[in-house]
Image (cartoon, rainbow, N blue to C red; front, side):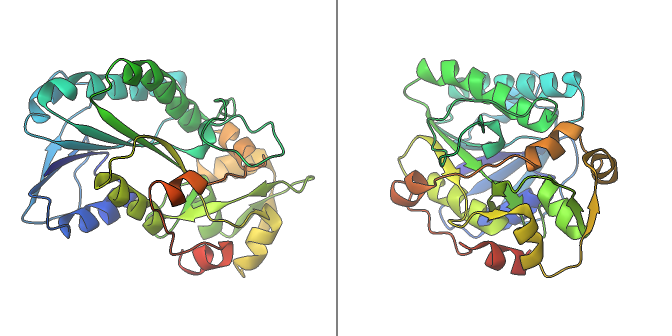
Length: 289
């Protein structure tokens, strides 16, 4: 099997590429990014390319599987549009090049959070306004709904992890924990998280299965943001949303997203995908972050 990985220069991609290189059934791994990846292996090659380029059609030739790790978004509408264009160009050219399966890494932040019940994969989209990264992923998924419906021969798996935590993760929550900061809140919202290694495991499960559709990824336990910080066993400095956004160099809307309750059910991933997270409690995730 030949596998193409987009966004291959990210920290998370380095973890994924190492696991893919250890898979005996994979003959070639091709990384595509505008930045150079630090990963090296005899079966790995990289192409420095903007995913919106027409040259992508040639790069896709000979690939059976694509793992799409969406690039990080900037904080403006232009960046959001660029990510959508990149996704459209990738998916439009993939079937013609012979790609049979696509694994699309999205996020739980695409969901409408205005509910008290646990969110499953049928929940409507409703990314927090102003969180450009989440809005970009939502736009890509909305476009994919129509694209996928017209191409039943192409197997598409969408993975929607909760807040990603781990040494290679660059999520808002991961950065918050590393800098020993917390959000000054007046409400006790509940959230979950998921360890980066468990997300990589879900990608590998999807790679070797025949499932399709969306799968939520989250630990079983949900806690308040305050409890999460207490379990991290670090003294935290509370900050306002505005100051925290500046300190973490992120859009204010992404801090707003962090302050909203978001609890997922990952039953479908556990039963149909066979996903068995190694770290299923918040304290275990933080201990290995």
